[in-house]
Image (cartoon, rainbow, N blue to C red):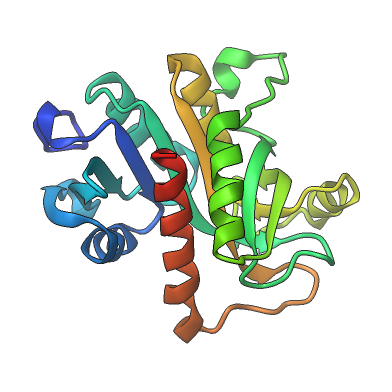
Length: 234
Ligand code: HPA
């Protein structure tokens, strides 16, 4: 048991999928895992553990933004022994060739700030995905015929952005999409010798203003869960 995760150590698998939304964790566990059982509900942040093709998996909400994800990922790694952590979530497209429903595999993520900025101080640490996971996810996505982009993303501190100039610079430098969690997941995985990846679906587009209709969100989210699970056990 930790401050934020009311589970026994044996309740949490070494492989953890991290959607931002706790109800997405519930849906994904009930849809893709066998024998999924609730292992955490502290503060309504749901976590479930079951098996995927015989492999133990935990699907646990991270909440929104890097400070929230940092709490859960620190505890999952340091207290529960998680070794492979894959964020599954949505992002906003930032390039004309990136379309709604496309899948983004984040090779690295740029930030203005993160919960790790305090320890990096004047360093610009480059957080990066685990290459084995990234490669396996690319293969898994190709089998699903998802349009997939691999490259840099932007982990922003804010959803309601008052600095359009930053988005312009991100776009100018080839950043594929914006979300709010991946960079700190990669920082923590680097610090503790774990494997991490962010598999994202483009739910909206900053340039076109397009957004994924809510009826389509479940299917796109399902593809992402399967890509993450297949990559984890490739
Ligand atoms: N900004 C930040 N995070 C997001 C967005 C966005 O536009 N879309 C999905 N996650």
